[in-house]
Structure formats: C-alpha cells, structure tokens
Image 1 (cartoon, rainbow, N blue to C red):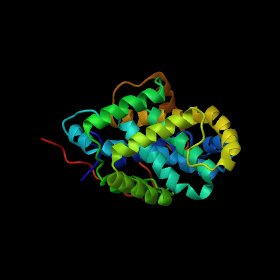
Image 2 (cartoon, rainbow, N blue to C red):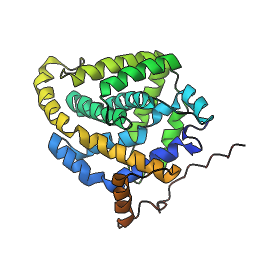
Image 3 (spheres, rainbow, N blue to C red):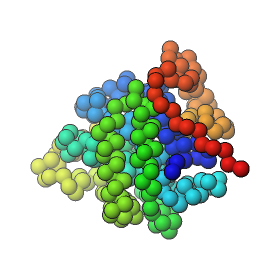
Length: 282
C-alpha cells in the first residue's frame, strides 16, 4: 500500500524533497551553529535535525487519514503523531549518546515537528486539541509507513545516512501497534509538557539533574533554529509540488536555492531510486 502525504503525492517524495531543501538551504553550516550553541557534537545535532525532516509527516500514515486523503480530505493534527514518532525514534537512535543529550535533542526535534504547521500557537494547546481529535478519530497507524520512509531514505542517501534512524523508526511503529498509539500519545503529551515546564525527564537519574538544567537553558534559546528551517522547507516543498500562493519569505528562499552553485530545484544527479508516481484516479 502506498502512503500519501497529499492527494497524488507520495509521502516518500515529499519527505525526500523537504530533507533535500533543508540540506541545501541550511545543512552543515546551520548544524555546526546549533551544535556550538548547545555545546554538542555537530554530527549528533545533524542526525536530530535531518530526522525531523525525514519523519515530519509520518503521522499522515494513520489509516483514517489515508482513507480521507483518497477523498481529497485533510489530515488535521497529523503533526502530533509525527512528533511522537520522531521523539520515540530519536530516543532509540541516540541511545548511545547519553541520557541528557538524547532527551534534549529528541525533545527539540519533536518540538520542531509539532510546530511545523502551528508556528503561531502554543504547543500545549496543539497537543491537547490534537489528542482529543485523534482519540475521537481512532488511532491506528499503517505499518507500510516503514517502507515509505525507507524509500525516502534511499532517495536521500547522499544527504543522510539514516541507517540507525530507520531501525529505530521501525521499532517505534511496532511499539505503537503493540501498546496502542493513543496510549503512547497520552504518555507523550504528559512527558513533553513536563519537560517544557522546566522539569527533567522522569527517566533521568537524579545525579544528571544539574547537567540537564544547563543543557535545557541552552536548548530553549535554540528551539527556533530547529523549528524555523522545517517550517520553511515544508512550505516550499508543498509549493513546488502542489502550487498555491508563495509568501515573500518563501519567495526569497526559492530564489536563494535557484542561485545556489548546485541547483537543488533540479532533479538530483545522484543515482538514487525515485518514488514511482501514483496512478491517476478516475
């Protein structure tokens, strides 16, 4: 089964394009800046930022959403499910980096995904309304999303070595199926709200509290550097694939990418597989 991000557009295609635009407009220079401000390894920060791009729309794989998109319907609050999957995935993929770094970057990436359609709203309101909507809708994720994300990762292998992320994502989807997505969403909402209120993650050892406090202070200052690139690249990717109105800020970004030495708005020269176009519906 194909997973769609929009009617006639595969999730793999959109995810790849967002990641590709992010790498062209921000990429390593941006990641080094964020890493410096957080006093963290740039490679680990890059993994968090690029994972957010790759997985930002995976919440659209809810079976109810996929039924609706075939009728031209929307997918309200898909970003809540996507944020959960990003947090859970990174918590697994960054396990070897230590609990403080792991929780901090997982939170930052999930926050960016949660806000990528809700930039002017507080994330607590988004979580609360989204949870109520999703529980009423019925929470069941299509496991085919794993293959769709793997396809996007193969297309973007020249941009991102996503091996450990893909393994962790598959485990996260399996957990959602086993434990129940709605149960995980309720736990996620409680955990994220607790962290945003200034409390250390409940699973963090007491002796790590001072280290967490120091990292949390730095992290709050750079959260916009996680969320703004994803918002910009997601909007621009949707415009390029679907058309519509282009705002002044996005127009400037489009011109910047067109003037880049390696034009990222043209098909990649890398020998990567492409997602097959869906058959037109009658």
